[in-house]
Image (cartoon, rainbow, N blue to C red; front, side):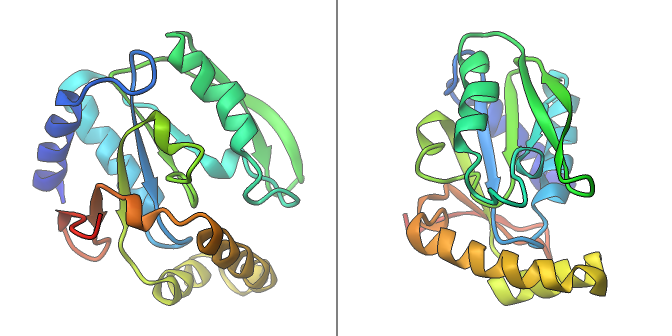
Length: 194
């Protein structure tokens, strides 16, 4: 995927800023679809061209009780400071301890990535320069995620999958994606269904 990502990085840097001085790019898709891996690879391709490209992981903002009710935290702790050209500082949720434990600072950069389920939701889209959807069906993504996490998290996956399905039914991201990325190959293509 490196050649495709290098080209995508160049394209992103040519976009106008969308959140203050920042080009905010969302990587969305079902849990287990490869969002974190794709965002890390894209951040590396961007770093080769323009220096560090910070990644906001929505798993750091979500909680057990608020799987999708993190929009206020994202707005207050990340989007507002970046839009003002200031460093963002957000709390980081510890999924084992079940509480926020620590903070992370993100400096404004030419491109900042936001990755996680729901990154392309309605409330975030006005701040985005581009939305990438990891184009893997929910069942295949869940199978990958369960294989990654092991049987000890099977109960969590049942709860999560129901919440994810309800979220995307109420606030879908895929129809609004600019690009569709296939996590099983190097293909990144325009979303012709927009």
